[in-house]
Amino acid sequence: MLRLICLGAALLVADTGLGQGPDLTTRLWHVMEMDDLMPILRDEAVAEADDMQENLFQRGGNGGWQRNVQVIHQPDRLAQLFRKGLDNALPQMDQKRVAEGLTFYETPLGRRMLELESVARVAIMDDKAAQAATAAFVVEEERRSHRAAQIERLIDSADLVGPNVAGGMNAVIAFSQGFDQAGGYDMPMGEAEMLGDAWQQEAQLAVNTEDWLEGYLLLAYAPLSDEELDTYIDFAASAEGQALSGLLFAGFDAVFRQTSYELGVAAAAQLSGREL
Image 1 (cartoon, helix red, strand yellow):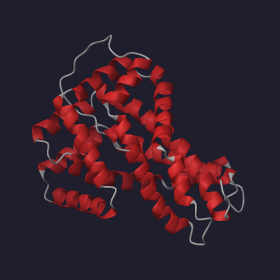
Image 2 (image 1 turned 135 degrees about the vertical axis):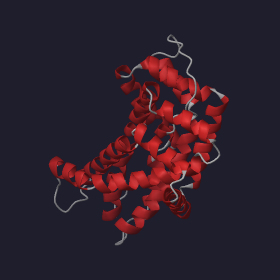
Image 3 (image 1 turned 30 degrees about the horizontal axis):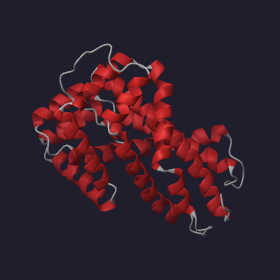
Image 4 (image 1 turned 90 degrees about the vertical axis):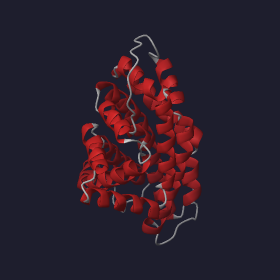
């Protein structure tokens, strides 16, 4: 869930009449190259499904788990869910500031950053690459390097951990709802129990999220100069950066709530040996 946290920085062009309402979500979709992100989201889900299959389906199933994951995460379908989330959240957003925030990504530096983010996101899908990125940050942190300090400042000032953890908890609850609805639990689980289970995972989710962010951001922004990254950090913490981030989080939340619910249903079917 990283495109939403990668909010670049540059001088903003305050064209207050540009890209308001539904046109703003269309502009966001094209400027942020969201069509390129949807297949990456699918591939991430498939990779995670491999790990889930090893841990959750030790007693077998109907063999259709990966097929179900692929169907749930078809890029066109993810795009539809994402855009619906954007459209639903937009009326509550400061549209002027969102439009101003998008201006950066129409600059040469903004285009370059989108490319860096996508390349790193694909690379870090590999477990060994992810572990290497996290280890590299630990080394930089122990050296008290300027780049490590910049990454930490970006995470803190742009408030990247909290919203990602909240989104993760929403996904956990949605999965439990789908799993319960499809009869996956021996005894039905109530909403209060699902919420309690999600809260029990909150602390570990926060640790995992911060570790992942540190490694990913260090890898993604390695080609940037200190000056470019400093400008980026200032923007990510600004009202414009936060407005754009908030709208993107809404899109991701809509995607992950729905797909997590459907994964819960598919997991219950897999355990029982049923076809969806």
